[in-house]
Image 1: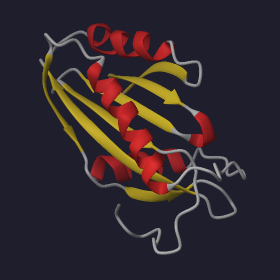
Image 2: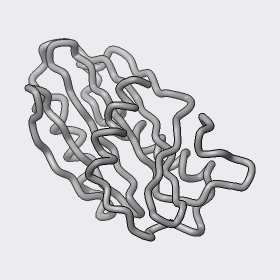
Image 3: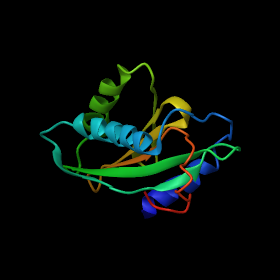
Image 4: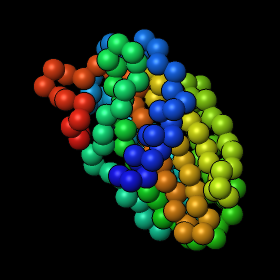
Amino acid sequence: MTVLAGCALVLSGCVTFVENVDPDLSLPDAKQYTQSIEREIAGALPTELLLDVEQKETGVFLPCSRDGGEQWAGGLTAHVQSGADSALVLDPIEEHLAADEGLALNRRTDDEDSILEIVGHHHSAWVVRYDTETGEVYVTSFSPCIRLPEDIWRGDTY
């Protein structure tokens, strides 16, 4: 959760709040969609490098619009053989997701980690960070911007 909170703070400084809420997407469906892309990312990792995958069951909510829209934010960590070249780890993910016309991809390096940023509809996003030293692939995810049901408070975990 610490990594998730850190990413949220970094990304929240860059977010432009617009009224871009998906009015037809329910909270369970937004979470399921977001986690399904996390699993696709992990599934695209080379099996000969992959050691294990840990997907978070719960996440938190973050504001995504000026008019009360929220995103479900979660994550996944995949452990691969440490020291593997970043191209061997991230290229297959990028190639797999490039076929989805609804996603935009951007690759960069930050603090010697390789990062793949994936952006989808209604502010959905996945940040894939590969740490070559530890062999960990961190996926921080943000669902499409939605309206929370009346019985869910934005401070809840879900």
